[in-house]
Length: 99
Image (cartoon, rainbow, N blue to C red; front, side):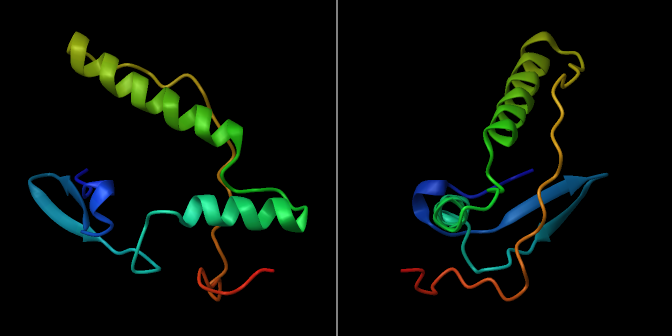
């Protein structure tokens, strides 16, 4: 997987498999901040957030397992699991006012 520099606020996400590279479309034309925005809106609305602590731990576990795999030159199992959060609704508008 190749992702753009998050400090540059743009670019494409690419996935390389079997010698082929394909671009992964992003829904909102940007990526940075969507999770934090959705978290703030969920807290304000009193509903379950998608960017939960359990999800954050699982992402960290994946990152540590990848790093360990690279260092040791062997596959490393990801021990944690998490329920996949629901996708954002098709009409979710990141620029809509929520106050």
